[in-house]
Amino acid sequence: MENSQLVAIISRLDAMIKSANGEAQSRRFEKDGQERCFVTYDPQTETFELEELSNHQKFEFDNIDLATLEIYDLLDY
Image (cartoon, rainbow, N blue to C red; front, side):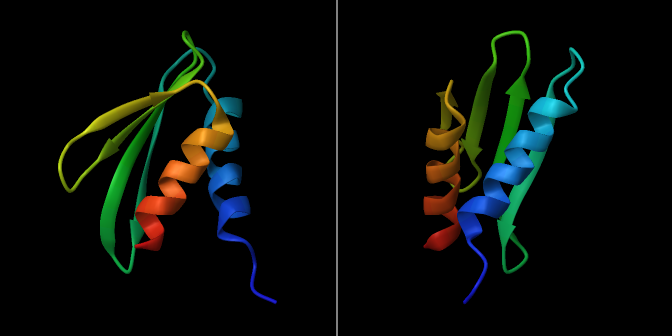
């Protein structure tokens, strides 16, 4: 059985939360060497901002599960 891609995404987002120490943390998510999105965690507001790199749309999530699902959708297509 293959490892869950959702678990890997949640682990990365959770690491952003844990390492924030009052400063914003950012990560890039890519598939096959192509960047799909850029995610920033703001510890002041406890929100994730996701930018789709294909069209530069930005979304804000206050829930790690919703952010994970959006990232998964971007990586899955």
